[in-house]
Length: 139
Ligand code: ADP
Ligand code: MG
Image (cartoon, rainbow, N blue to C red; front, side, top):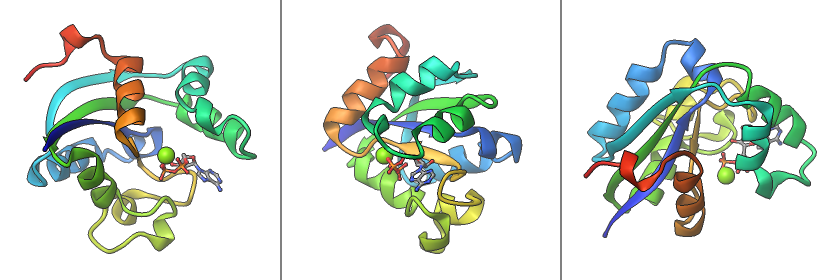
């Protein structure tokens, strides 16, 4: 079933000049970009995006990291896009990520882990709407 997911190329990966490599991986896996936006989050934008993690000990550090430099936010579309992207990303901790995953290739540690991907249809819906009006999504 074709679905959409939200991906973010995080500030660490943008700094490492990995935008092109990561988007190539999405395309090769059949995840078609249908919206792309480059921006720098304010702290408040990061806090609103990660509101589900508000009570976590790493919340403040995560939001500081996510607003520390430019990011690329994408809507990806394809069969089983949510799970496909999670598989492509690898485990949250790059040290535990499988060979061939984005986080294995570009992540430094459990916080600076290169990419974000929605984890369910409900979060994908919230996350896509957080950044993109319907009219800015093609296809
Ligand atoms: P994922 O991004 O794999 O869905 P989570 O939703 O659990 O992982 O966490 C969101 C983000 O918070 C992670 O991608 C990572 O950047 C950061 N994070 C998660 N766990 C930790 C941790 N224990 N310490 C620091 N940062 C963390
Ligand atoms: Mg998550």
